[in-house]
Amino acid sequence: MTEMKGFPKGFMWGASTSCAQVEGGYDLDGKSLTNWDERKLNPGTCSFHYASDFYHHYKEDIALMAEMGFKMFRLSISWARILPEGEGEVNPKGIEFYKNVFAECHKHGIEPLVTIFHFDMPSSLLKKYGSWSNRGMIDAYVNYCKVLFENFKDDVHYWLTNNEYNVLIFYGAIDMLTGQPADLNALYNGGHHQLVAMAKAIHLCHEICPDAKIGPAPNIDTAYAATCNPKDYLAAMNMDDLRNNMWIDPLVFGTYPKSINSYFRNHGIELDIHEGDMEIMRTCRPDFIGFNCYGNSTVEHLDYYHIDWSVMAGADNRNMSYLMKMMEKPGIGKAVKNDTLPKAETDGHGFDPYCIRVTARRLSDRYRLPVIITENGYGRPDTLEADGTIHDQYRIEHLRGMIEQMKIGIEEGALLFGYCPWSAIDLVSTREGITKRYGFIYVDRDEDDEKAKTSEMKRYRKDSFYWYKKVIATNGEDLD
Ligand code: BG6
Image 1 (cartoon, rainbow, N blue to C red):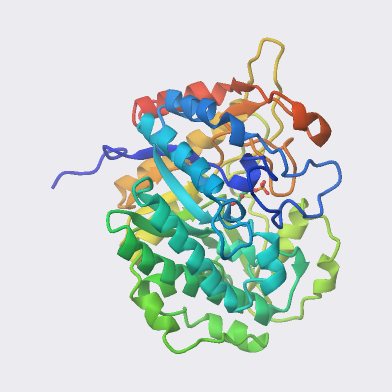
Image 2: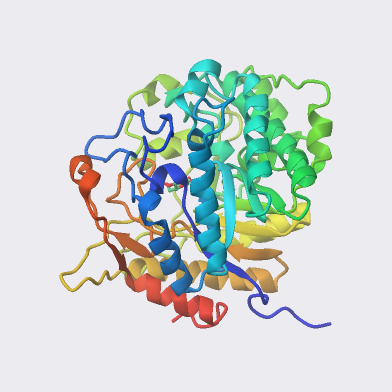
């Protein structure tokens, strides 16, 4: 038997972006406004209107990705550029823009990995349906997918359905489309509707684009038990079901994990499952599982109490305590700090490179499907030096740790075929403006929208750019 050593030949190295966070051109060429264009911003952070102006810089950006040796580039399509009303009339300018982007990728031998829906929704659609909790969204989404598959069947070979649909309902705490805490029943039903819609899209993709591959892109981690107390172990198992497994199981097995039932019962949640829903999901057969993974959840059991969601209204969503609060699930467990994890050498930030290995293995074992990491990374402010350099050693350290563990994970049997960390290029964070940067490519702009409107937004190569180029050139062998 030949033992797998290192990354397989043809491993898909690349990186990710999303349209709302990188494109700009928010009102150009027929695009309508979205929830992101109109959203209330955190104080001191820029809007999404101009972002990194990928809309005008895409040729230069894709050339830089090619210089790094990318095999794959994950980007998303703006629903509001393609169907300004969300439904109905198609905007030819929107189709043309993405055709040009895909052509540019292929010119450089880069496969676009295209997310159909990454958090941004035409405002008109949101007004009509309210949110995903409205079942009418399923048809609207499938209709949008049909337009994409018909128009881009020759350009796209890898599709992702919805980005982090489990985060979109903030793991059952907040509706990210509206930014408001919502009724738990509505939130989880919104999750169910997304799963049914995605399953229908997978069927449709296989019909219209028989050569393309398609999979979901939830945010998946692994729940670690906080201690060896069996109650914590059970809490971790049940948290995995609620936070992770319930978002993939239906698309592969056509079932929801049974342990979520007691959480649902205790909180008055009842999924409005229509006849045929589970069958559509059972038979859709994703070609792979994409997953975003930023770290683990470390879980302590929590027997029972009621959460007072009103404390979340108006809370600062940039605080860690806010995010941890999201993960309090009465009757299951709550998120706690994990002090056993390594700390980055440069800035002492705690991170968990093991989680990627554990999660890639866990998903491969559970679903027996190829898996790809569609996001992973570390955002921090970067400094553009007078000589045009950017020394982001902390990012290199962070990604090196991840890639080392991915490599061992593959040797241990993880069916990993690609890595697309967040992000290819600096873009606007969902909560923290452009100051928090994730890219290998620096974009010269700050939080000032007025300045951004006319800024050249010059691109610079960060230290991590050169490092990642070497990693790709050696297929993950040289990580120094
Ligand atoms: C993921 C999202 O949850 O995390 C991205 O898919 C997002 O859109 C990324 O940008 C990083 O989070 P943040 O809040 O720092 O932008």
